[in-house]
Amino acid sequence: MRDRFLTGLIGYPIAHSAAPAMHEQAAAALGVRCHYQLIEVKGAGHDDLRAMVDGIRRLGFAGVNVTFPYKEAVVDLLDDLAPDARAIGAVNTIVVDGARLVGHNTDATGFARAIEPLLASAPRGPIALIGSGGVGKAIAFALAILGVGELRIFDSDGAKVARLAGQLADRHAARGVASVEAALDGATGVVNATPVGMLPNRDSPVPDSLLHPSMWVADAVYTPLWTPLLLAAKAKRAKVLTGRDLAIYAAADAFELFTSMMPSTDVMANAFDAVMAARYSRPA
Image (cartoon, rainbow, N blue to C red; front, side, top):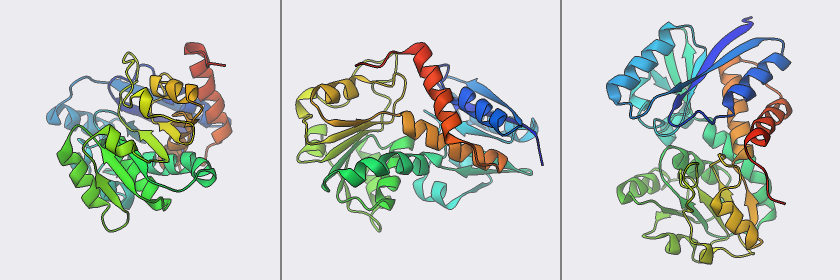
């Protein structure tokens, strides 16, 4: 069994990522070594991504994670896709399997684990999803797997929304809507799957006036942990879910794919919390 692993993350911006701490400390708790390399590249085109992916294959990586804005762009550069990634059309985890690169999507499994307790305690009803990019697709499929009712999807790119709704047509009542207001009209919950609110951006994808105490609000962004959207939802006394649990569970599922070992989510959570504590303070 291997006792050393080289892994990493491709994306931009990623200097803030808690992933190195989570993966490296999870490995140490299992008695193995892991180096998690941040591969931060702005504006990478198809040829740039191909060069990076080929480098992963050649340089001894066990695999890498992929984040914004490359989760969809890497799909056609891989040798194979796991069924989840193939259905979603986005990859956040690439595993090196011999000479082959296989794409997976642990955003979907991670979000399902994160949101399930909140869904279990919330009334059933329409859910608004803001964003239909790589993480938005994964979240949409996770919600479909969990059997939620109507899913309303809004994105400034209407063609992407239509494609995603079409992908879900045989398993979920999903439809695109023309505005955030239409998405949230009567919704029991809303998920932000866009980078809006990620530092240095301090905007919110949802006007404060649309938030109310009887809904829940989740954000996939975790830098900062308390985004403008979640601060506004908290002020309205809505139930909230930060990006913390999604980040931890998605990382744990990726670690298992890279190493064939099951990490401690408690160790990963402690590592994540330490990184966040060093950067941000949580409101009372």
